[in-house]
Image (cartoon, rainbow, N blue to C red):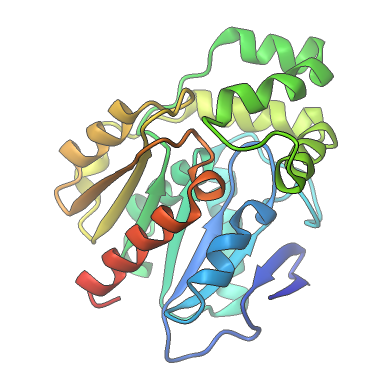
Length: 257
């Protein structure tokens, strides 16, 4: 795998430049964290497709300020695709990343032949206590995040410790803006605009975006498949990478992507 800075965004890729004959999964992380959450996917799926994970602005190695709207982040993704010419992009996003993907599939539909929505919803209202915690006690918020996002896993493992450090070192203003973007996001009336194959990945024990969110997406996107990952929380790509990757591979193979 290769880490680099491309047009101001931190990038983790299986190889650079991506192979022109393959489709490219573009992985977009959630409100807290970075491209590193997709390490298992970037490595394991690289034999089938190009794999590229990015840091959103204000996160990880990326330059520039974060955004406080999903529309703003979606434009960042479109600009990145214009600048890099990734072949046959398949956007794959978790939580706010999934909101960004929905925005792309609805408002830039001519550019995408498919998409993957992970632990997200068509509407992402945020509890007031989350905003209060970020604003008034960010260290406490950071300590609280594992219990809200992880169903299993060894909290003392190197992987989880590294992710905990990432949360603690995040910019509170950027995180607040991300949750503000989620709170304002609502495409419930627009889902019928999506007419390409979509894989919806829900997680059985997700507290942030419960499985009913995924079911709603499945019921309202006529071209969608739904897979629920058992025994996983909000960070299912990290908790259950084997099951998660197998679901993506099955989707790619069934739709010839």
